[in-house]
Every structure is written in C-alpha cells, then in structure tokens.
Image (cartoon, rainbow, N blue to C red; front, side, top):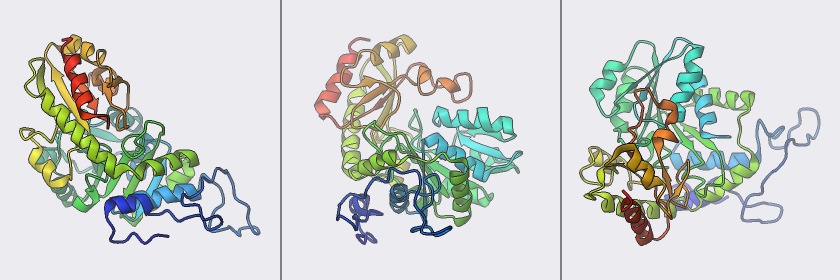
Length: 385
C-alpha cells in the first residue's frame, strides 16, 4: 500500500486506503460484490470478513479513505447521508435529550429529527449559529448535540466552526458538522474542533450524480464504537458498487472542487448588480457577512450559489424553468450544473417552520462546464424575468 502519511490532499485522495490487488496486481481494488465469506472453520474468519452487512473489503477502502481525508481515526459508510445522520443521532441521544441545530440546514436533516426523533422523545430547537450569544442562550441542561452546516443549505450561511466547537465543549456537547457543501478538499472541521463530520457522499464526494451514499468521520473511539454497532445492527450500510463509485469519484475531488469554485465565483459575480436579482448568497463575495470566516476556515468557497430574484415566487419559477445548461433537479455537487427551487423542492418539508426558505430563492449547483457557457445561461434565463 502506498504510504500517504504526510502527503498532500490530492495524493491521499487517490491512494489512501487503496492497496493494489495482491493476486493480479490490479491498480484498482476489486469490487467485492458478495454477501458472505467462506470460513476456514467455525469462527475462523479470513481477515475478519464474515458477512457484508458487518464488513466488506470494498467498504473498508472508502471508510479508511474518508477518515484519512477528514483527519479522523474512524470512518463509516452508509446507504445515504440521512442513514449516516440517523445512526449518529441514535448513537448520541436518548429520550429526554435536546438537539440544537442551525436554522438553515438541509431540510431532510431537520425532518429526520423533527418527524422521527422528536416523537421518540428528543427535543429540537434551532438557532442562528453565526450568533454565539444566541447559541449560548439556546443551550439547555438537556442539550447533548450541537449540529451545524457551513456553508449552509440553501442560504450559504457561514458558521465559525472553531468558536462554536469551543462553546459546545464548554457545555460538554458533541459538535457535529455537515461538511457536504465544502467537502474535505476545502474544509476540515475536525481540525477546527468538531467531534464528528457527516457527508452526503451523493454530492461532491461521488461527484457524478450516479451514486447514493453517506459518510461519517470521528476521532473519538467511544462515538465510533456506538456508531459501528448501529451500522452493523441496523444495517443501513452502503453496497459495494456504490462504494466503488464513491471511491472513484473522490480520486478527482481536488481538481473538481477547484473548477467548481472557479465557475461559482464567476456566476456569482455575474449575478451581483443584475436588475432582476435582489441578493446573492455566495461566501466568496467580499460583502457576504461570513466572507472573512469562510476565507479563514475554507481553502476555496465552493460550487454552491443561491440568490433571491425580484418578483418573488413567479419570477423564481420562471428562472428555474428557463435555464438550458443548468438542469432543474434535486441534489447537487455533480460535474453537471443543476438549478433548484428550494421552497418547493429540497426544503418543502420545512415549510411553515423557522427553516422555511423564502419563495424568491433559487439555488445553483455550479458544475465544471465552460465558465462562459454557464454565465451566459444564467444571463439568458434572467432575461425571461
């Protein structure tokens, strides 16, 4: 196996956890598309492999790889991002506990807690995570988990991970960061004090809109033990083929995130000052309220851009249905550009809550196509307003 200790991110993304096949010399580790493994005798497992729900060599590659890239000791791969979040929350919480969550998180995360864990007996509240005084005031004696996204979905709010983690630890809380929008290529929450990082691997890590998956990384042995048990006992594991696609995607993560960031910056600049645009949400813009924090804790500003159109819901709908290169679809983070109307798509489940997204907001997942073509597509769609 290539020794990746001390190597750069791109080198580790291509080699960490990935030993060539000792039988054939294949550079790419095989896909172990099997449900079970032959034992030498009763209890005599070959390299610890027994049944794929418990362990699988293909999944081990991805789990070691993401732990390396995020700077943790333990990585876990699940069938979806929400499956990863569910396992983590059940590992950390009991009925009577309280979760404090940012007020601009992925709608599915809020729905998971609000519709599944709250009826189980967990309490949930949300807060403006960029306001440390508000966070401090919202912490209760029953609070166990502080959950944040940065950049957030879809309003691109920036949270100072180091400051919030320090505050959380003052109160004995577990600090969880959803790092989906940034990816480890741009941001490393564990190095800033977070206890756990979660990802929808469906997005930038997979990178090609052809895989569903979730990942979780921690440096804490006790959290890892609980999550590992739930991964095995509840069984929401990722399948070998999906793992293979995710590992393949991560190999180009560094170069993709550079291009995503370049293109998003260009699109954001084209939106600023346009008469049909009321406000642009992109942390790479100097007037973004979280720009300085983002510049400090991120390497680049990423590929996600949101903006508010003048004219409200009708204008927003006209825009998302007028783009040509930007395709109207759920999800984000693929090489192709996507446009989304959060109020009725990704965040429809939080309508009527404090997380409700204004109906004038459009979210762009800026892909890696030619920059000029993407800018021209946005400009022609704005001309329809």
